[in-house]
Image 1 (cartoon, rainbow, N blue to C red):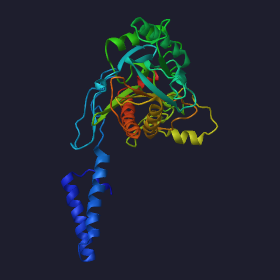
Image 2: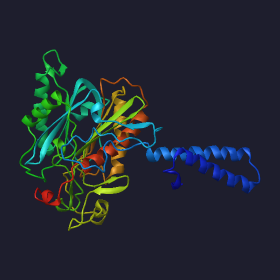
Image 3: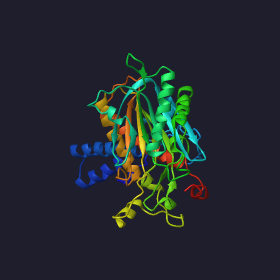
Image 4: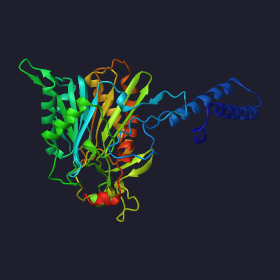
Length: 401
């Protein structure tokens, strides 16, 4: 089965013919069943080929990445030109603009996703310890209003103060729900726990949120790595911070015909992170020269206290026109990409949350399942981008814990 994965179309056809000729000789003649088998083999091989090569990362993992650099605008070409899925720069998504602010000494920050035209959104909370603002407003059973901004930050619950500055900034620029007595900006927020890295006494505040919002309005800057809300992110923490590794914020986006899906994710997980089944970050050995397994560590120490400060927060953005209920389902399906990349995930020691936003500039009609599955694939790429963009020397990491 595996030999079909990297074949070109001509080789696939040749292989299918070879298999059928053998079958025909074995039974003494070419029958209609053999012809059907021929078509099935070719179709099966094509499916395997598509699954192996239809989606590539939005940034070349072999390239050197610089923390805070715009790595999301590099687009890899597809080897299979007939592939349905095409990588695209995150900045080509219309209807969302990103701004960052951070304290590089304290190692914490804020990322603001600004929607020039307020956009419908929903969310699913999958971890046991979220720090959030206004997320219940996004439930399909509520009187959901379009979002003006989504905020990701460090600082745990203290970091929720950043949204006050974001709301002030939005009001000044005339963005918000008109109550008849003034504008009320609709702002949701999720925070990661980064108090164990850098200076835990310094947290994102109103001023930092205001700056990040100003920058989002002025210039779209979806920067990957140790920037904004990803400044203090870490992964692989069942053994404590001394055996954890640096993580950050990542981005990826893709097209399926006219349908577009982008994902932004801050990876601050208890668990390890994998890319296509290969561990790329997480819990290390005591000498930090190899990896330990976060899942194994949890199973071996089932009654031990865990560091509860973990949260992976993600946002799915699409140009598809969806209602709140469908957006919540998209967020739910997209989370499967998080589960494939982070192990363990959604624990009581995490506050994992996934948002889904239907960008107001989009008018594409598409199946909710298709959007969710595409989002789950893009999620994996964004998580890998967060890890690969935020790597730092061990000496620098250890100096901040």
